[in-house]
Length: 181
Figure (cartoon, rainbow, N blue to C red):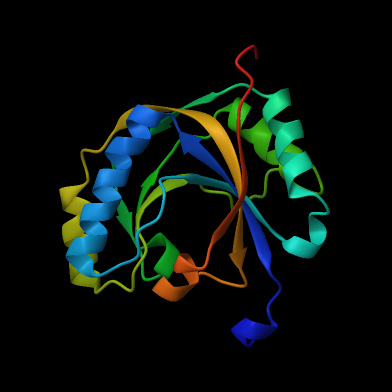
């Protein structure tokens, strides 16, 4: 299928609190510089949906963040590399019940897809497998607990297969999770 014939998509991301976001941004930026890859903001993708299926992403985001509080997630210490551009280097995260609840609130069928594997991306690139293995070793001790206090809706266009795609992303809205939940 031609990328231009694919529908526009909207991604909903969790954003880590500021201190963790700054630390992760530094890692992402260093890897991007080192490997001539795109820079992007640290995030954990909740769900990506065709834009035509999301009538009002801002209202959906506001409903979601008013209904749920910030999430605490364990980011596991075993980095994984992949030949997939948008998962070149990731840190897997746990899936606590609170995360499942947020995802199912976003999903049109109110479910958590069986293939959902939460992770923090550190690099978007076409990686040589040997470089991927080296990066896995380098980041194998990146185990930590992260608090995610914001959610954002991003227009990611029809795909994420190259640096130009990433550079064209557009933030629709970002909201802070309610603190009382």
